[in-house]
Length: 337
Image (cartoon, rainbow, N blue to C red; front, side, top):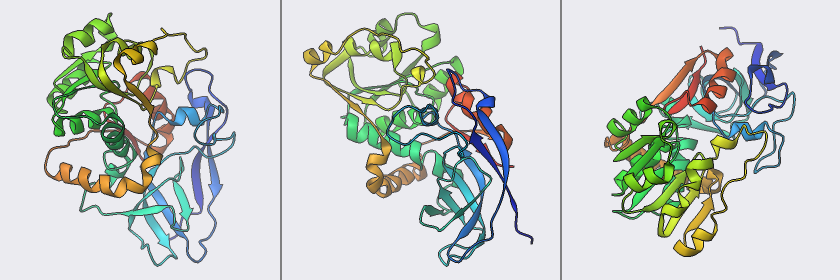
């Protein structure tokens, strides 16, 4: 079998102003060098698209260096080993690797984790048993610290993280309320993810009144993936010693001008609530323990997940852009075919 000599990659062509467009990305072909001793050549099977990537292409100072113009777009992948000169990996192995938007990658093996298809489908390494699952697990359990009987409210509840947050909260004996942007998503949250209540924010005019209706005992934990007006309305409804995990602010990622919201920090004095930012990489040393528990819940049928799969490497930009108009339910992946 002849080894591939050409790699397809998406690089950043220009920084988006507002909503990203395909023209912000460039599909290029580059030569693949021969493998050196200790190296592994992998071919992507699934590539991840995630909301955090919008911040990485903005050029603004953040928790990680921005993608520079001309650089390969960042992102996680599940890939299969094509050729190996590393004794730890063999041709045919599936691996989890942060190799970005490219069809092939060469690694010395240090940034790869071997996957066992017998434990779970390999694609779950980018979803429920990957970064989104870890975000849900630590954001809820370590930041929100829910107690049985408490009310947990989740924005972006039908996304890759939100679908898992609600289910873990149910496992811990909480009442769960989800927010999403379509009636189909609400149906999915209630029927498949076990949410006790949920509402479509696009057909709701008074968020505070809706929280009062669906969270009659108040809100103990709020897992925020969205920000904006949905989050503004949470503060007056927080219970004493409420906890807020700020995971994402997707409603504002494409804003060209920052809106001024109501100044509600004073309400935290009244309720003595805690608002804490969440970055999953802070918990990397504990991923192993979380994956063991999450995999156990999956096997026991306590946890379900949905993958929103877009076929075709060439469709990566559209798959990514669609995240910001709510195209996906569950974890969006691109299957490289």
